[in-house]
Image (cartoon, rainbow, N blue to C red; front, side, top):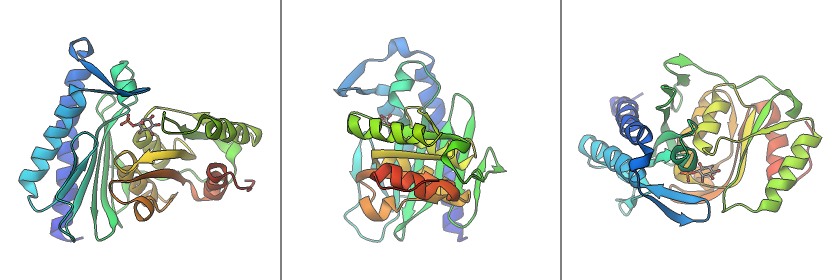
Length: 267
Ligand code: LIP
């Protein structure tokens, strides 16, 4: 690993903790927040914006030549080709956050040379930090983590994500097919955190028909480096795009990919 990438790993870990503490401060005083409604079931508050500003400012001071994509501030510096790009969701799981529920996280990905090189997902409420660098493995709180060794959908819980951007009929079909196969669904309201649970060997997989790059790029690397399989989300959608996502333990990836696409595969 080059020194430059080591510096990016160290920075992502440090900034995730600092920014997580900013978000946690707001989480402890939700009554002081003004909540804005971006759309149906789509909320935002100053907590999201302040946390993202903290991340962007700190990373820009350390790596002024890197570009930045954030859920709240958008894309900055993407015009110049060949630059590394930070892809950030300051609070993934905004709705659980605003309701005082613990299932939210800070998600920081670093993308360069057409691949996610560093991924960090931090849940400040539990204090858990999930991290990976490409080719270097994945860890939770510094300890190696690995996906589950499963071969069928009835051998654990599957994360099903949904949002106002997803079709209710798709969720209904996926839930019916999953339960019919003896599986069971789980939802946190944070795609990044649910994907981190796949990497940590707690969920067997995660699917969602429509998710943003900032929600999932960091955690998809976690899954890959923990021995799992992940869809080519970055190749399909880029650092600013959205699309469907599937990531899982290898033994159930094809079954969950079929669940997502409505194809037929039994595991
Ligand atoms: C969340 C996503 C999740 C989706 C939620 C929500 P946000 O992102 O990470 O996958 O199911 O509805 O969109 O809006 O909390 O940053």
